[in-house]
Image (tube, rainbow, N blue to C red; front, side, top):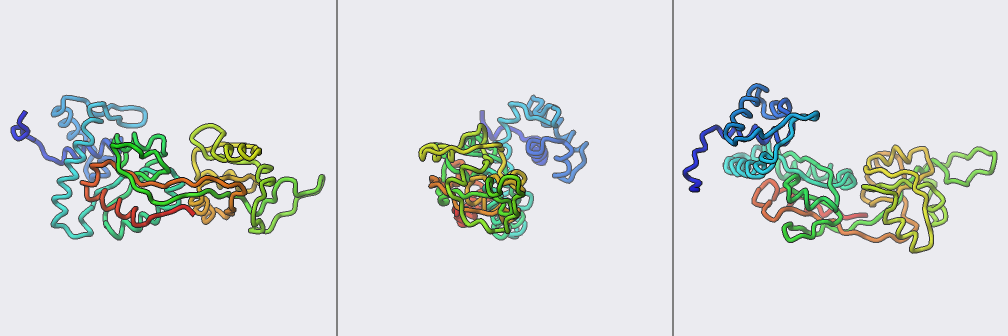
Length: 321
């Protein structure tokens, strides 16, 4: 088919409605995002359905879910709209160049807590008006999310080694421990005698014996065994994990007021400690280092907004402590 013979036949703003509906999952939120009425969104959707011969979105208990056809159309439509935005931006003032644009960055919440604010400030300086959306990902699913265009860029500890993705090293990360310094470790008080309150920041280090004696809180996508358990087992030790959570942000709620300890990436430990009053301590066992990488689809940098954000992340070079 000759592509030049196809009559577009409708206002390109209708495609903006499609994009907003797909990303917001709600006609109400799409209308708010676009600054139009909900009836205007409904009319545009009806027109899109006629053009593409598909319902495109179906109602669920959580809002509007895209059909398979809509999932196939989304990257094509977004790329076309981005090209239009780029052409209009060529003559725009820097502050207006990316107005209304967004870039989606995938990372786990440890990276988001440690680097999110710094990244936001740096992007605001380089690309005023550009918005960032953060999506949860990790090394086991990041490649699939990038290839599925659920995210534009990703910061992870691995998972990017595929020929369809580009990636570069940002640095190395290590591990640290988090405790509540005001709660003494188990076994400090004599039987029948109340434990004294430890003075804040009195703890300087953890011995291996004290480390394994404390209860542990694990951050994991599933199960109660992590890299710490492998390291301890190799040294002939075993810890007691009392709880497992999928979110680093939950750790202050688990640790505050208890003698428990959590072992986590050092960048997240320092970010949490700054906000919670918890204390960061070195791991008493030697933990492996891990690579921190930035990944993107090979064709993504054709979009100047994604290219600018990638350049900002690369320039920050956030390394683990």
